[in-house]
Length: 300
Length: 307
Image 1 (cartoon, rainbow over the protein chains, first blue to last red):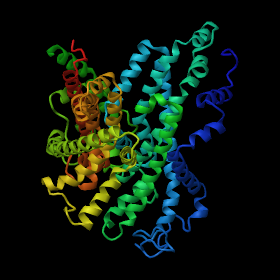
Image 2: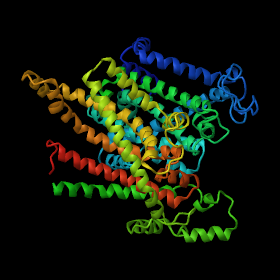
Image 3: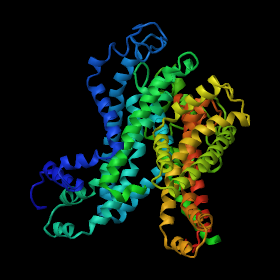
Image 4: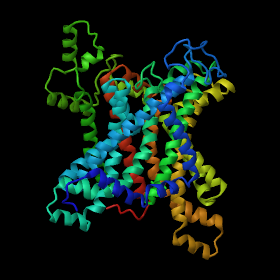
């Protein structure tokens, strides 16, 4: 089987089915039996719809100045009120959902790409390769949380793209750690040894023999890293190091709004609540996924 | 004991050097000339840029720059801030106590709240208390610290008028930032305490204690909580690092004059000697705290061999 030319997507989806333990439909049903997953699912659905159909939902373009009288509190015409330049907050929040989803997806994708590659290579080859890669990973983990992302943005310069890369570069070590330890448990399996005896290349063994078997922890971790990434990226934007005005990124919206904490608190609370609900929903989905897919990770 | 301590300290040295190297490379690996970047591409004349490069030693080959950097750091010289022209060490020393104060105060909040919530949740597993504690925990995990901070300011300073909006460095002005950071951190502590407690409560010696007829409070205080506290020591160490970096956001929200506020300013102005200095100091503090936690753990848990 390992000798066959790699039709990776088919194999992956087949293995994915084994990871989830049943057909996708049964899995989905089992997943949404959890009440937390139902609530979270609705929030995420609303978010995705808002992002896709933003131009149809939003009554104004996000940057339209004087769409209404500046600093109008929420009312029928302006659901979330207007900001100091008279821009419609509802439109800005709707368009902001696009940015938030993109931030989360890109960060997690880059994290997975780097972290999983490092983890697979370190775990599979062992020895010096493992020692060097893992010591490097440990050093990365020695920098506390958001500070590393901040420092990377500081060197690259402020901006949304730089912030996205900074968060990804700062957070991949978690994936490397988890994937490596999973690889160690499957590396000595008989089918891997059989593959080696049959003369499969290292790439074939890793891609088709090992990766599909360490997929569950990767999926669970990715689902939990998504909300974390959104939170850190929003914080960077809030500090003025991420998305720059007039981008309607939710974290950046709070930066200017601080000056109106007395006169227009809704300018703070609406984007804040949007970030909170989004992160909460993805955290709940991630938690459910972990409970369903990988009970061993439950206490982490 | 001494040998254990010594070995741990020796093990820390290569890690610290790796951090130092990474901090150095942070600037060296950046595409583009740091001096040009500093001037935001608006340098007055090529002579000024050249002069600046020479002053900062940037006209030297990379390995020479590295050895100079390491040598200087080992002598306690972190360079001079580009924006304030003051030694980076002085800038950091001015701000460090305020951040330490904030981190310790938040740590106290997070441990007290986290312990109480976690222990109660474990004792009354699957009850309303447990559900409430875990809901609190996931909400805390999802809360943007900067919004939570602004909410605190809105309610307690603007609406109720209990605290001044601008901190004056007094103990009272520490309350809101410490609560903000501490409550968010407590959500993780509560969750980990709960699972540590549940694990201990499932042990045989708890059953033995019960069958001996010991009272429930005695089992809890004498057997369960004491053993559950061990893994919590580790968690607290990890939390401390999170609190140090969380300070970057909280200090910006509350205008708290600590190292985080200094850092954000340095980052925004591309003051790279100051940036490097701050990153190095925070990462070193984190490594040091973890060392202390490791040693503490070994002293508290007789099962960890010291040799």
